[in-house]
Image 1 (cartoon, one colour):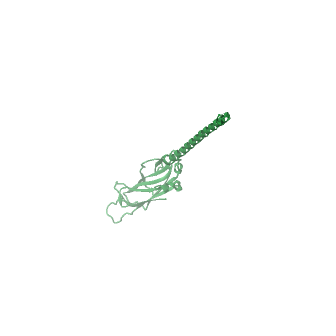
Image 2: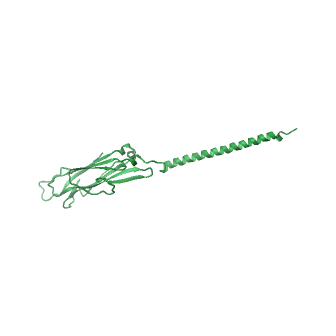
Image 3: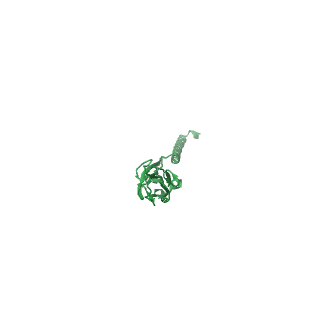
Length: 217
């Protein structure tokens, strides 16, 4: 009697089945490997997005070009004050933007509108002056340094103090403000000096005095 294991057709079927199993195993391995590779790429992309700037795009401030207006005025000047020469000041406007990789901070001279880190001193002799500055990026802050200028060089009194005063307004000081759509809007500030009248019964020369304030919107 012929043994079933010796049947050529049976052996051929067994070899085909083994080959198919090997092919299935190989395909399963390749598919699993591709899936693992895909998962790894997704994981790498997520980590890069969260912890690197590779995929980050420039923000709205990077392309923004808002206008900044500064109005400077002297109210009630007493022109009989021989010592009073004018209001000397300088101002800086800082802007903020991000190119997706790093924050970009720029500084502009408030009065000339040109890029400048320090700002140049300016003597305001008239009663009112207005300046428009176009900046690149969102207006982050405005800072003004001012004091009353005298002919003799004596230190005038401004807001009860001798010497210069510093006024600063921050527009983007919190994360919420930096994320707001209003950050790309134009900004406006006003600096106003009210010069005190002279004392008609005072004896001798008087040092100029005044009160100054800065308001922004």
